[in-house]
Length: 333
Ligand code: SF4
Image 1 (cartoon, rainbow, N blue to C red):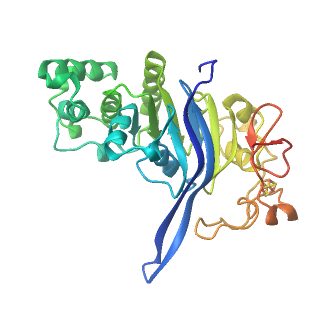
Image 2: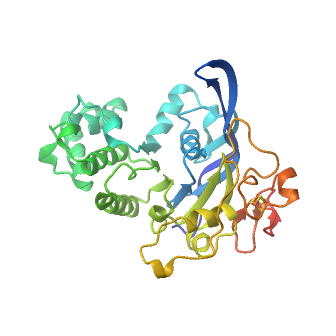
């Protein structure tokens, strides 16, 4: 990670609310609070992991950062440019620098296209190499080879590859335009465990080679531990803890982070902790979020204050940001 800590992405007050039908039998519209008031900086060259349980808003936040969906409120500044102020064409140009890798490589690759066509599509769309077929083919070969796919297979179709190889093709496509930021949305969770490490190693190697910035979204804290510089924990659309990965894993400050870390299965029964805080209580809904701290209905340390007052994100002595009434820190302006 860069020592200079130059900011690539700065999200401020980022909020997304969706209108959704109450149920199959009830056409009444409800508001889903998917992401609420998120302030987040992503530094150039780092891997920031965004973690939390399914439905906590992390994928929505990833899409908001790339402006694949419009925020209800708030802004994203990418490399000094406020994305909400760009025209459609300017945004299309800006997207060259911001790519996404999805969870299911089979669904994200067109099954009727060869992998040559899949990887060269962004090059065609943005008229790279002034339309030269020869230069484009050279680039596709180089990208596939860097991602561990033999270029002689470039005229095969996605179904002729394994899940791990398909994800390598998706990575090659994401790299085609030399992006600065890649949002990796659960990129290994659809793969066999034996293949996951290979894809993670590839992402790490490519990041080092090209000084890429990664926003790595995962529900699995054991996956992000060794690949992220910082980790950001989300609960019900809000950040509850953000800090340097080692600090967060060694000494989680927010009760929800502690719960997530305690839930990582340990292979050695001797190492399993007996004093785990068990979560009880009702799982809150993003349609009708609870008052006060969003986590209070499940938190073993909940006090009366937690049920009434929203804890603000504070900066702790070690530079972490934590939103919990029990954690001391300075208010962030
Ligand atoms: Fe638990 Fe209260 Fe902290 Fe929320 S503010 S995490 S309810 S202790």
